[in-house]
Figure 1 (spheres, rainbow, N blue to C red):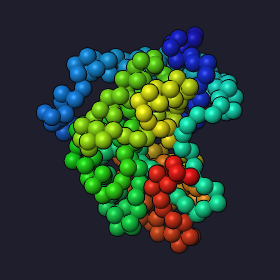
Figure 2: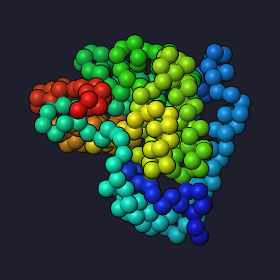
Figure 3: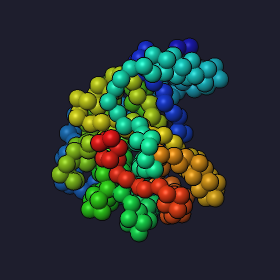
Figure 4: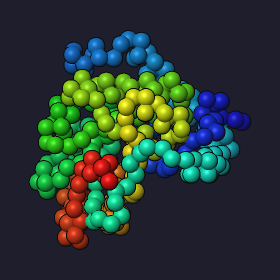
Length: 286
């Protein structure tokens, strides 16, 4: 059985499967969307967003019906796509200078009302600036957290509106997902996001083009500590420290309680090893 036609992109790249949900999962009752934000996204756009979620679920259902739940197909596609794109030049930030003991921290999947404030407290105490890649529907629910992130000197990035794997839905739906998230961020902060990171690290030439049309720069990473898998805190810390290297660009998730618990110790240990924490803008300059 073949997967849906619109996900069979011949020029794509599967950088990493992080294990995070590809479609929104049910959870505690969210805060209501404030009236000023409710009108930022039109009814037509909201209908398109709902359709994008349906398309992602259709893909997941089709994928699960493939032999071995599609793992063999996914591996083959990833190898083919990586081989196609690895020699192509596309604007992005994937690491910092290899001759400087710099580290840049990024946090995905927030804002989360329970975890994000603790992460912000830890960063403020350590004097570290980071970049937060926001899920649009969460930012819409918790605008005060978004404002706090900016007020404390951190940068914002676009992580799509619904946290869908954007290469697994039609390009027009992927554009709606990114555009809606940018509109929410701009409505809250007064500025559109400079950066975007597609959920799961899934991107292809089409998505790169969409990001450029929306005036955003793609950001990947050098190392993931694996906090999304909810490992024991000590294991998470040990694994994160193994990702330290000059020019490291780490991806964390500020909806994972263990992340808030471990980040302070990680920063202390990294500084003790002679690393300096810099904002993503420094990597962009270099």
